[in-house]
Each structure stands twice: as structure tokens, then as C-alpha cells.
Length: 155
Image 1 (cartoon, rainbow, N blue to C red):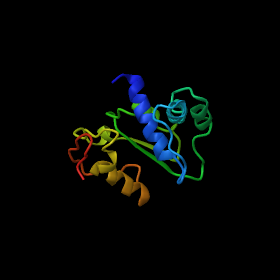
Image 2 (image 1 turned 45 degrees about the horizontal axis):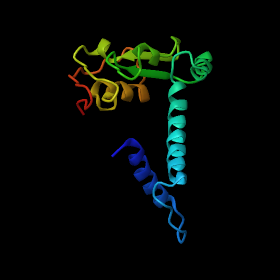
Image 3 (image 1 turned 120 degrees about the vertical axis):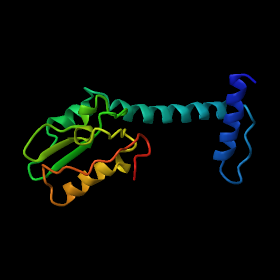
């Protein structure tokens, strides 16, 4: 089966799925079904790429956000890992230093913390930092160090 034939089959399936009740069926491979599939794919691609490009360093969105990233009346705690494979370089996660900002690198607190982007929510060291930030808020807090692996964490 060629790619065109695949598109016709998929397009016909989408056309049948999108068809209003009690309407007449569309012919498989009609130009309407292929155009609809192309439109659907184009819309999805456009929506995804528009959001992705906003995250690129130097984008107008990030430049605007970074112009005034903090408010004086709010305490900020950023918990990040050196092994982050999504935020690169990992230091891009941090806020500019200030009296109301605490940037934490997990590996600076615990050398055996191997957490990555996905495992931070399941990292007992990060959770201790979060509880401290929501409670006492001690800048000198040191979590009880535990070994943490990527993806699944240790919680």
C-alpha cells in the first residue's frame, strides 16, 4: 500500500468519524477526506510548533517573561537537577538572584541524587526542599540525602 493509499484509508476513516448523524456517507478517497486529513494535521502541527517555539531561548515570550521574573512580595524557590534533559542548560530554570529567590541544585545538596526532569516530583530530596519552602523556609535547610535514580525517583 502506498502512502497515498494510506492517506485515503485514514482520511476516509476520519471522514466517517466526523460525519454528522443521518448524513450521507462520503466516498472513500474523496478529495474532501484527504483535504480534511491535511487540514487536521496542519492545525495540530501549527498548534504544537507555536507552543514549542515560545520555549526557545531568545523567544519574545521568554524575553518578556525574563524582563520582570519576580515580584518583591513573593518568596521563590526553584528546585532543579543538573541531569535535566528538558531544560537545557539546566541553569535556565533558575531565577535571577535576589533576597526573595532561592535556587537549589539537587546535586549540590546530595551527590548521589541522579534525578532527571521526570523524576523530580518523585525525588525525596526535592520533596524535603519543597516542604521546607512551604513551611519554615530556612535558606540553610539540608535534606536527609537519599540516592535517587532517573525517571522513577525514589518515592
